[in-house]
Image 1 (cartoon, rainbow, N blue to C red):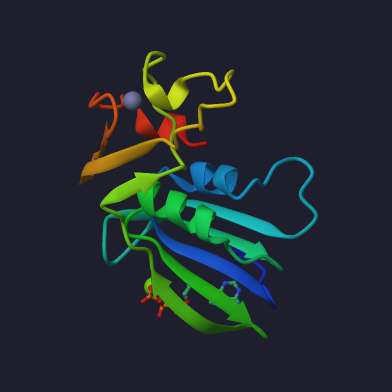
Image 2: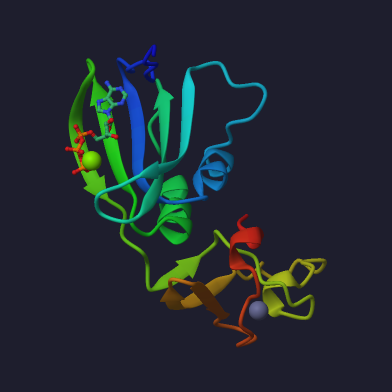
Length: 157
Ligand SMILES: Nc1ncnc2c1ncn2[C@@H]1O[C@H](COP(=O)(O)OP(=O)(O)OP(=O)(O)O)[C@@H](O)[C@H]1O
Ligand SMILES: [Mg+2]
Ligand SMILES: [Zn+2]
């Protein structure tokens, strides 16, 4: 039988040890869509030694900005970020699941102050902020209205 492999990337980012099933959320966070112009490999449900199964995302010519890193840490708390330079892993870091989450998730409560319209010049918009009550499963509580956010992964900004 012929063996097929993922083409190695020369420069870019490999996000490894993503919780099984979350790879599509990772590429969405990275803004990868039908207009993509670099090689992207999405590998899902790979048997893993550390956990039962994992997903992997490999993106050529791309690094992650701080906001993307924060979002990925929320939905894939075991992920490792491997920077590839000249085909080699030049740098490996583990994401750090945060204790507080500011500005990357929106509160679902329409009456929450973070969703108030800023119609008057005197009002500054209030940046949404949540306490992380647990990472697996992800449970976020709004600092302002104290409601727990249902399906937090669906409320990334
Ligand atoms: N040039 C490359 N192109 C595509 N993927 C790569 C490249 N180099 C490494 N990788 C992938 O990056 C990830 C990390 O590579 P590494 O060699 O550090 O593996 P590892 O020792 O198994 O790491 P870990 O202990 O984090 O699982 C692996 O998924 C590997 O397949
Ligand atoms: Mg490995
Ligand atoms: Zn709220």
